[in-house]
Structure formats: C-alpha cells, structure tokens
Image (cartoon, rainbow over all chains, first blue to last red; front, top):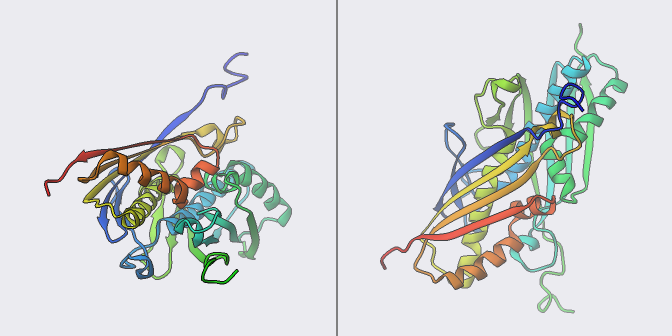
Length: 162
Length: 162
C-alpha cells in the first residue's frame, strides 16, 4: 500500500477553461488562456455568416489533435518510431436533433477517424499502439462514451526509407 | 402520413470533416474546409511547446460556441430578446486516464457551463430557453451522453435599459 507500489492511487486533476463572448449572427469569440482568440460560426443557411468553422467541426478537429498526442505518447512508451501522421476525421449529424423536430441525438450519429502513418514499424506493432490509444485518448473516449459508433481506419501510407 | 404532417420523419444528415497533419512535439496543424489552419498543442510538462490550446481545451471552447448557437436559435423561436452573452466553461480531467495508470475516464470528470445574459427577459422565460438548449445542443449532449456530470450556472448579469 505504499506510494511506491501504487503511485497513481491519487487523482491527478487538471482544470480546463475557455471563455466566450457571443457576437450575434451565430458567431462566438473564444479564448483559452492567453492564446489568440478564435471564432466559431455557422453557415448562412442557419443564420450565420460562414466566417469560421462550426463548433462541432472544432470538436472533430480537436479529436484529430488529441489522437495525435496520444499516439505520440504511446509510441514513445512502446519504443515505436513514427515519422509522420496524416489524420482525418469525418462525422455525421442528423440536424433534426438540433432543430428539435425528432427524437434523435443532436450530436454525432457516427464518426470515422483515419490515420495514415509514415513509419517503418510493422503493422502488428501498430495494433498495440491503437489498442492503447483507444483506451487512453480523451476525445476519442468522449465520443465513444456518448454512444457514437466510431470507426478507426489506420494504416501505413508510406514506409520512409531508413 | 403525408410529408406535410410529418416533415421530419426523414433524417437530415450533415457531414463534418477535419484534416490534420502531426507536426511532432505534441502539435497538430488542423484544417476545416477552406478556413485558416489552426493548431493544437500541449504544455511543456507533457512534451509540447505550449504554443496553442490543447485539444480538450478546444472541445471546452467549442462547447461555449455551440451553446451560444442553440441559445440564439431557441431564443428566436420563443421570441426572447437576448442582447448579450458571456459564456465560460470549466472542466476537470484526471490525468491518470490519459497516462493509462488508473482505470478512470481519460476525458472530463465534470463540466460547468456558466452564462451571463444581458437581457430584459424575465427569469421564468429563460427557464424554457434552458430546457430546450439542454435537449438540443450538440456539444452539451455529447458531454452529457458521455456520462460527464454537467452543471449549468446561467443567470442574468445585466438588464439593458430598453
């Protein structure tokens, strides 16, 4: 029961925070810490000016960034060398959820995450990588835990000559 | 069974897509449609260069933008006048989930969303607004459906003289 044998029995809490000021016309100015502000917007079809990605597009993009962080972390732990990653996520929404006109989820009805790795590692070694990323990636687990069917399409695009 | 009486019996599917290219050092360059690219990063503590918000900070920020869109939409439907909104979300993560060192969720252990409205509307009318936003907001439902305890702290900050 010593801390040495159970070093992670205590929560390691981390706080996240973002501020926003609504600008009207479906647009919001957002700020995280001292970084440059950015905006979410909506297409003209729903009353926006189409000047920025939608909030849920930001979520899909953030998922790409999150998966990359966990891949980089787990690859280092496993001693895998990854030379490059192109990551693409696609999701589908049924707008009736947002419109309130049908009893369907307002968020994703499915999400597909594709990664094309540049690596000389063997596919079997990438399987263990994927297994751990699926278990540990915050954004991926948020979507999975929300009941969204998630498809992973990960493959080696290019084996860099070493 | 005519389309006139059941206009929303058919799914209204919308596709969302984001691309990313991993830059190394926990950083990813992200692109949505033709908008300017943006980056997710990580603090130096976990191997990043702290040059951009983390992926999960983007998720928290996107939630602010998403709630604003749905508030604006529902307020228009209900005939409520909202003159301003300041929106802040705070979430907590237990880093052991990401680290893989304990069997805890890698995403949010709680999330609080605060809105300060500038409006002359009575608080009772804002209750119906909140009820519908909670049901229809994509990002809020993603977090709620993932089992994250969500606290809403919405109040009128300023009643603009009309």
